[in-house]
Length: 376
Image (cartoon, rainbow, N blue to C red; front, side, top):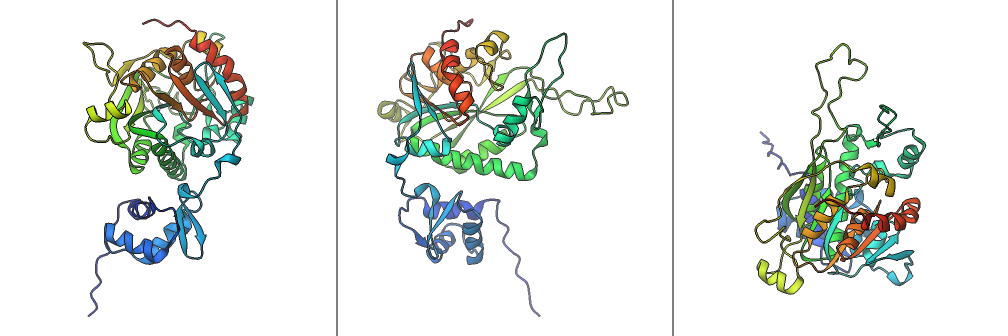
């Protein structure tokens, strides 16, 4: 009688991560057979066909086939950065690049960034050309265009409940790839503050950790937004006492750190990173920040749909550099709020923006926001 052996259940992404580990330090392509052997050494018995499938199905985002049967990590491909001419401009102590983050980041020097503070397209789809076009025309799409009350036009919000399982998978791959690029340019001990949403922050954190960052918890921004609290659509009269989702009163900022070298004190001496700047001698930096929604006066200065208030951004930028020195990166500059906060604090910063309209306007936005007086 033939006895079937139970099939080993793998964790999602386990084979993929083992393949990445096998190729992590390789600058020359290696064969599928060699990759398979390394994967087996890492996680145990795996069908070679499974390894081959992961390699084929994740081209060119993660893996690139260089020769017949030989592969490299796409991020390890030789890059002729001298031919990459990205438009950029200097705004105070900031340099802003026009281009796709995944094209500009490879041109930045390794170990050149001391912190990342960013509000990325954490639904991925909401800042695609198609959806931005709908936003600007007022047609909505993935963007929720709230109704006006008392003549006041409220800001649009991306609807993350519309994301499909496929969108979630793409989101994970997006942040995994971003994590790989950031890991190279950030110094050991550098922190990344990544604005997110309660519905997708777990995906962002998991992807960044898969890219070898350490999970350092989250910063909770206490702010009441327009998300949630609505009655059932087209049935609000039938179910007047029901809310489909809890009304949102907080916003998570994912906090991760590139592993330190040695002890924190050693890392601080060598790289100037590893910890967070204290608020004062008596107060550490807290992981909960009371924050109002972005005020109308700031939206007038910088009318970007995802503008974060300067009071919040200045707190995060200051906390990100424990010794008050180094360079901040915002790979999704948008309104320029991170760069404006860095300019206010007289800190060097780098921003990347793919949208030409936002890029052309952000110079004025950054100057106005950096001059803004906020309450302490």
